[in-house]
Amino acid sequence: MSLFSSSALRSGVRRREVFGWAMYDFANSGYTTVVITAVFSAYFVGGIAQGAHWGPLAWTSALSLSYAIVMISMPALGAWADLHAAKKRLLMIVTAGCVAGTALLACVPALPAQWAVLASLLFIVVSNTFYSYGESLTAAFLPELATAEGMGKVSGWGWGFGYIGGMLALGLCLGYVLWSQARGLPASHFVPVCMLITAALYGSAACATFWLLPERAVPQARAATSAWRQLLDTWRAARRYRDFVWLLACTVCYQGGVAVAITLAAIYAEQVIGFKPQETMVLIFVLNLAAAAGAFAFGYVQDRLGHRLALSITLIAWIAVCLIAASVTTKGGFWIAAAIAGLAMGSSQSAGRAMVGVLTPPRQLAEFFGLWSFATRLAAIVGPLAYGLVTWATHGNQRVAILATSVLFIAGLLLLLPIDMRRGRRAALETVAA
Image 1 (cartoon, rainbow, N blue to C red):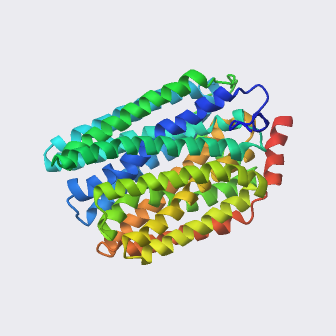
Image 2: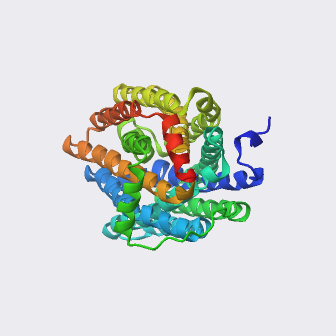
Image 3: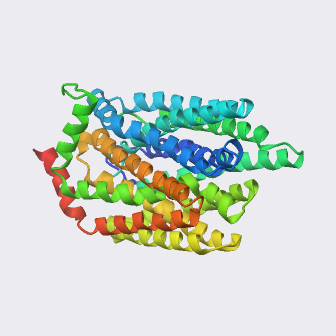
């Protein structure tokens, strides 16, 4: 059976369109893998901040600011995109913004110490804000491409392609890092090159999406409104879909824990376990390999098991990851936690996005995915910022912080219980009939 099975696609959707959509996940995953997870995060804390206790808090605070910007503005942008049938046009603009912000990070090591800290935080806020916009906009295409029964498969294809893209970006960067270290070149030399590699790969791979993925939406006759009013209006509309609202609450919790893994894995590996930079990059590379396998395979499993049960299984795995990571003292032990985290990461993110697609009214895709983006960005504030605050309050004890992260996954598991996917899907389709 072909990877892009026609039974999972909506009538009239071509496989090349799904490939183009999945290529955006391929393109943007290099940013999170190299900049947020493996390279620049650890370089900022260990190099620019010189290992100070405030380093993790400063890093997570900058990310939290970018997520707050997205959290407030994305529902309004999503509503504007629905109104004007402009998801693709807006996606092109925000992609250019993230690519430019990532390239500017290459300038940071050449600046004086105090300016390097400020510039790092500024460019991270800029690049991560545009990245987050793009993540929400590309997710809003999913229900246009896949049937409700195939949503898990198609979402899994996207996440799987994404982790392959992340591995490619990280593999290219790792090769350059090893070449640089063999010649005695410092991190201030190879980190900027890694940023340029990531920006170039992001921009070039995204062109496949812009070429192959059409804008299927049509303009709608709705009055424009302010960002805050639109946010409130969208929330009032979403409250009629109680299963969707429960999913948003669940998302805030478990995605907060996932955000900790994405944002602080390299920092924890180097600062607590004692990994070297090249070892950290290999670790994240293998983590992405496991995540790709989890996303591809679990996409099929979740459509058979049911989205809620599938997500529950991954959250239990995440709880195990937190407990293992908080207790191990050896690199081998941390490798076990990382392998489980990789499998859980791909499958949990794929399952969550598919659930949103099933429960969203078809005529308000970008708008409701804007609310989903609101929830994921709130989670990305709550999780990493809580981690940074616990670390700062305990004078650098990141083991306590990672253990506290397990509470987020437990809460997410409990909030899954009231969700009825069949009831939620009926509510979404009744909107179309009305």
